[in-house]
Length: 110
Image (cartoon, rainbow, N blue to C red; front, side):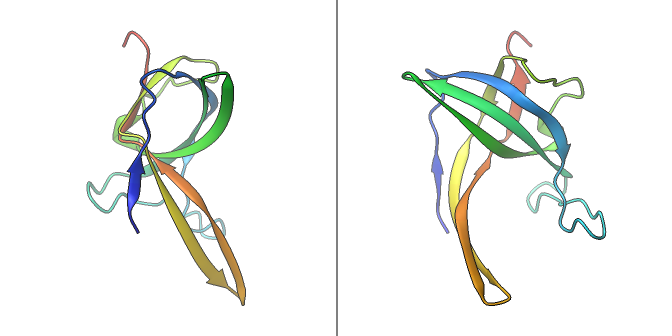
């Protein structure tokens, strides 16, 4: 499926939730791995405010693009943010949504 670039150049972006490992399976605790780089993946909640509207996005980022001390409330810049739609069927039920991915999330001024 194609992905689409998201322009956040005029947005104010804050960390809403600290990075956590992205799991392949909650039952096994297996951490998802980036297919391109082989780096473990993390999920970070970002509050993106632009043009009078704010949205919370759960963004997947390789661990190499997330500093260790990234805490809620930290203003950040987001590098390479993209959106991609997805759909899957499990046990006869179809689910769909939009996933968000970035190359890096870095504190402002870093």
